[in-house]
Length: 226
Image: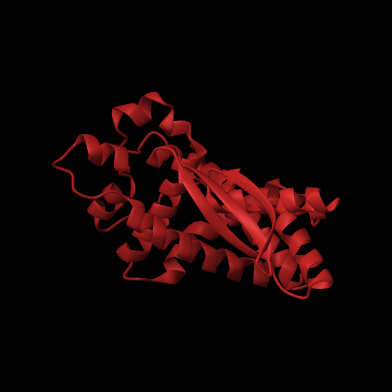
C-alpha cells in the first residue's frame, strides 16, 4: 500500500464490503448472496468516462487517435491492478480458498476488477456524485503521468496503429469482437479478433477484453508486415 493514497470514506460500509467481495467467496459462503461484478461493470464505465475527460483536458494538443491509445494504457488491466496495489486492496479482498491458494490477491485481473468495483461503489455511495469520484481517481492518474513518460510510439499502441492503417487503406474503422472466454471467474482468458469490413485481420488473447483486443491488433500488424 502506498501511504500517499487511500480509499475514500464510505458512508455505507456495505457498499465497500460488496466491492471487495469476489465471486469465489460467495460460492463458498452461501449466506453471502452478492459479489462485486455488477459494481465492476459500473466502475468500468465510470473510469472510461473520467479517464477520457482527464486526458482531453491534460493534453489539449493530442488528436483523438492518440488520446484513445493513451486512455487504453491508463485504464488497462496492468495499470488498474497497480492502482489497486497502491490502495492496498489485495489484502482486503474477500476470496474463496481456491482463489486464495492460486494467488488471487496478486492476480492482475482480479485486482483490476476490484478497483473498478470500488469506483462503482463509491459512485453509488456519493449519490452518483461524479465529481467526488473524480477527486478520488485523478490523483492516481496524476501519479501515473509523473512516473511514466507518455509515449506516442506506434509500437506501444497497436490498436491506434492498426486503426490508422485501416482508415488510410480501407477507409473504415476496425471492429473488435470477443469470440471466446475460458477459465474460472478470477482468472479468465479472453480471445478477441479484429475485423475490417467483416474480414478478420488478427486474433489475440488476454486476461481482460482490452488486453485481448490489443493482442489482436498486434497480430494484425504482424501479419501485415507493419
